[in-house]
Each structure stands twice: as structure tokens, then as C-alpha cells.
Image (cartoon, rainbow, N blue to C red):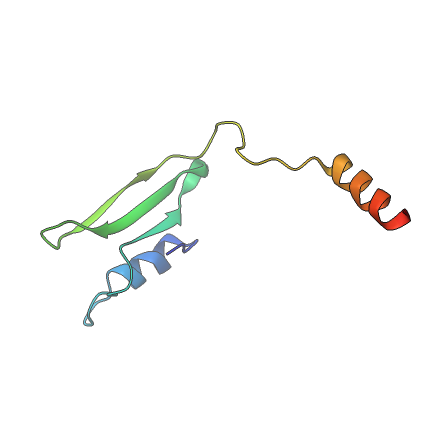
Length: 78
């Protein structure tokens, strides 16, 4: 589950007075500095949290906008 606000993510994963969500293994929420926080449970059913580092490598998928424009123009004008 992706939830942007940390407070909302904590309310969802660790609800007070009601059972925890059964269809969610963990939740990732945003933190300062581009990092995220992973909220979940351990095997012994205790609350856990840990950092999720910002992705700072080269993109794995890249769109070449100019090539797409050329393709669209060539297919529609032919």
C-alpha cells in the first residue's frame, strides 16, 4: 500500500481498537529528503518500520519524446 502522509499510513497499518488490515503486508509512506518509510509487522506480529532510500540510479525505462513524435507523425501522414 502506498500512502503519502506518514500519519495516515500509521493509522491504516496500526489502527487503535480495531484489527490490523489483513490484505496488506506493508505500507510505504513519504518522509523528508526524498526517502520513504516502510511500515509493517514482524513474524512475531510486532510493529516494525524501516527506511526506504530514494531511487537515485539511472531510469530503467526512458521515453524518447522526439522519437515518439516522429513515429506518430509518420504513421498518421502516410
